[in-house]
Length: 275
Length: 312
Image 1 (cartoon, rainbow over the protein chains, first blue to last red):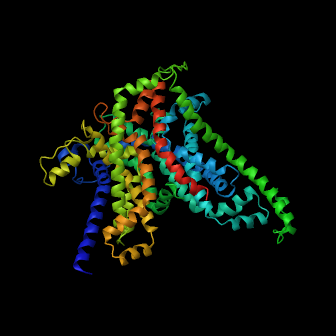
Image 2 (cartoon, chains in turn green, red; image 1 turned 60 degrees about the vertical axis):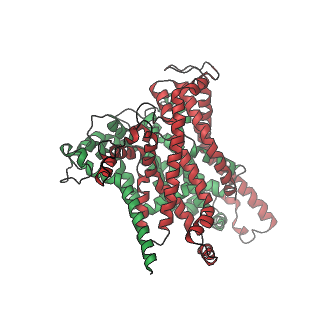
Image 3 (cartoon, chains in turn purple, red; image 1 turned 120 degrees about the vertical axis):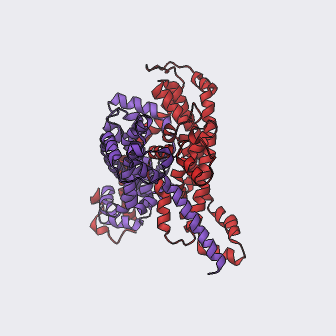
């Protein structure tokens, strides 16, 4: 390796490390601030590590947001599961049962993935009020499932399109119909796709703020991100408690990301429509 | 339905009779497929398309109090909206946000992807760290960055401590640059996604292409400038659409990082406040509908590019 090459390799690593420090900085700040007692929060010593591990801030934050944390679990888990199931059937149809006009329907679905929700919020609230699901956990789960239809169909369609038609033909010859092929041929091999879609939906729904805020705004029932914003919005809450609450809100998706990073990556790429 | 395919037919699938039978069997299941998809079609038709039309309709009526009022007023809400100072601020802020957010995401996303593509040791770790922020919500991002952007501490303190003692900047609460400061937090969260797209794109460019350029005597810079960047145009296009959409609908970050008056007010925030804070539903509907209209400038070209891929 020549000297010049050594230098350029070194520079690449340095730049990459600098970027990584930047991306980790807010997490570092959240963590060390969350672990400090209120008395140790000093604007001039903000970057310093805490003297010891103090969990009082976390405890206080947990007492404030734990009901909302569990609400988010109750909303996110079923919504992610149901929307993934719907998506797998829809994706199966879009990939393998392209009835006349199916592609146009698919494109029209995709548009729904992009449009800003502000353009549909008022009718959404009115409709939920009329059917009695406004301010109701079930209503929010339903809304997440409906808004998840485009992306889940897209992800599963991409996966099923890669399944050779011969496999389906074999199923047909064995006497399987529409449901048989899904149940016995595609479902057993679609677990990787399920993992990606579940992960994607879980993250999206858990991290949602706007829909939760509009549909389920009562402080007791609100999802975790709405609760964290309420805490952050009231200036009376100490910084260490705010940071702890934010970390609690981030924890489930961060754990899932660290455990299943590869799948997350795959979801990211497929979600960009290059499926 | 299953009984139509008789056991005796195996091995004779190519005969004309079998073909006819097969296609009618096929059509039957095709109908089932359509029926199974129908609830989703109806849901999307109502909850997305129907609601957009409904929003457009609300923007032309007199519903500007808590009481629902569908008295038609034509373009009155729209004229009012277009004359509002706040709306002008929204457009200014959208422009600043879009330029700042999109350029940071695309430039840094591309740069990091190119660096990671140089056979880096520990690539997976670097990649994980860069994408990490994408796993957290806009609210969490906002809470962390609000602390970092506190004038008397945070980034200011860090910059002062590394030697620039006079450094002082109000970040998100700066009356002039507040919106631009917010894009730093936004790009922090989203750059990893764009980086992942570029990295996948780079991995899709074959070694032969690079080798051929080298043989032709291209320098590394020329290789990227003349060959790799053009080849990655589809990725850049996707990145523009995704970040552009993010710019139009930014809401949670500006809720938490809001600066003085309307200096960081966005269309999304305006829509939310008008509607659910001030109960000016028709005005809010006009803002929401305007956001849909803006997003069409990104969605339509994107779907055009998708169409060929979908119908493959």
